[in-house]
Image 1 (cartoon, rainbow, N blue to C red):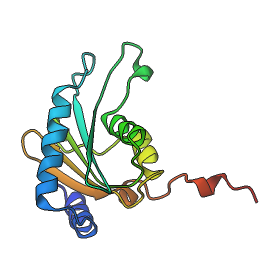
Image 2: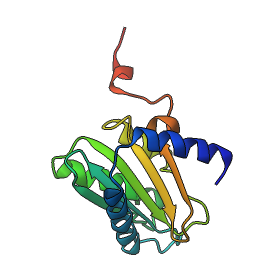
Image 3: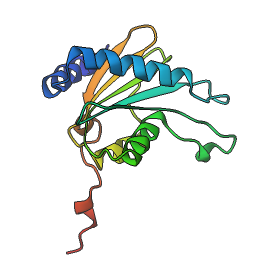
Image 4: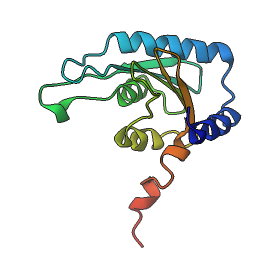
Length: 152
């Protein structure tokens, strides 16, 4: 893990009051979701598990399409499923990939998550055990928000 990732790991852990057993459940849920990913073109399978304010875990996986823009990311898949189920507040997101290095959410996922949980803690792990931690605000320091829509 790089020096920057280590710094991020400390600040994300300090801001995340998630119990260790919940983190274990998030990791297992994200891993199971990754196993169900549909990634025949890139081979880059991703699973995500989102912890809601009431302790519910909602998962998502990436789903590719031969028309590449028609695919979807695991993180937004979990977010959309959570919203459909009536959840609007989230405390933690765990991502699992088979990459060599932990992978943060893409820009589009960061923006979508920001709408609901600017203080979201994020953990990214690989199947080989590499791990990184961030807060959403660290990954997207100047987001476009509802306030951005206000006209002066």
